[in-house]
Length: 390
Image 1: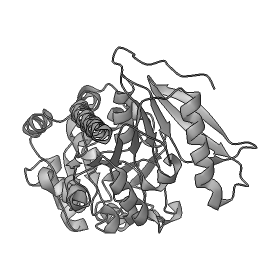
Image 2: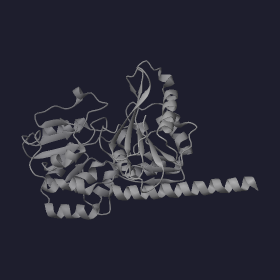
Image 3: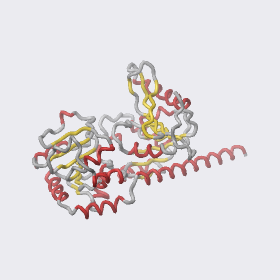
Image 4: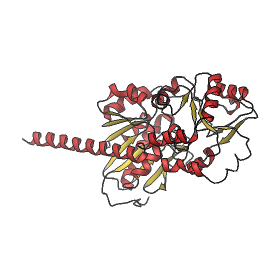
């Protein structure tokens, strides 16, 4: 492999080796927002889970955004499951050597990839805990043990919301809450977006939309009941269906599944709605979620109705930016209220709230914490070295 160096070298600093259970091309969310910002100043190697299709183990590396190199390991389809971690340890070591990665940090999105970094010496280890993975469908039984190990190795722990912060704060001395942020400029394009998206323009109004992954966190029974209660309303579902059977999704003439869309196109869909919804189930898998779509809907100028997700209720519900509903009947009633609100007043309130929130600010704060952690670590090692020589 040739060494990848197409990034801004004006700020000499560490590279980032990011271990992610979420693929770069899946849904553009927290990992993409943060890693793309890291990539402006350093190389990022975004390591995904293996693909089992190769005659010989190898990397497929491609630069998706400036400085961000998505690194997909390819293993043989005959690979013994018990040997995957060993194979990945070998591949990660070869990646570091072949790409000339000298100073680097580990950025972990999943504890399950911990065995892939054995005996390596990063400047720091960051655990960006964006979800309670152990609560998700098909979560590996060993995940709890590996997370405990990761807490012991990490220099910093970031959480994807305040509820998750409360759940993790006693497991590490340096836990910081970083709730879902927003690229206001991108989503505010919906406020004056020209025209309609082709696959949505023929759907009658009123339109109530959702954008996100459609999985076990979705209350499909609630969605079915909403469509039944208001057959004159049209419910638009945008996003990939994963971990649940598509055959189980409610089907009605006024429910429209449009599939996954590119991040760049999302404002064009949201602009054509009359309201946005978050019909999440209230269960173990949603106990700690902090939906990125909450500020995105608000930046796009939409009224929003959600079920009682803790990190939506506080702060969005408490300050009147999002309507909270617990039953299908209440959800319909709140949607009627939301769609009758004074648009200018609602949007003004959203603009005021979002003024202090951005992925740029989140990234800057995280970067400063990492720099401080590295400095403290190096100073501590220096003191130990000096003491041992005395």
